[in-house]
Image 1 (cartoon, rainbow, N blue to C red):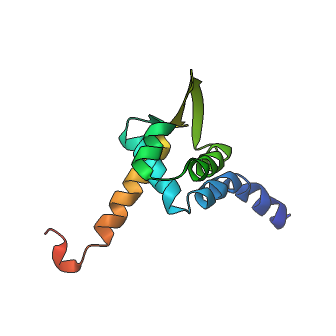
Image 2 (tube, helix red, strand yellow):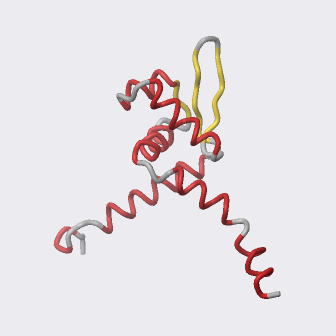
Length: 112
């Protein structure tokens, strides 16, 4: 009985763990950061220009992010746009990055 309760309690964290696994690549974190900083949406052409990635590499990264529910795409004519699936995802990434930067300061760099 204990094992069944454990399994039921941990089940919702499976999708979250998959999202973290997908975000375990610096390029994907950078893409998330770019999208968040731009207001949530950019064209693939903009992402290519800002990252310097190849079309194939960008496509692979965005595909994994879309499959994990982190981004969504829309087509407008011949242009493909990528947007955060939820603004909270980008905000959480930005807050975490800021927190880690603050925590990585040398002790004499921390304001008193």
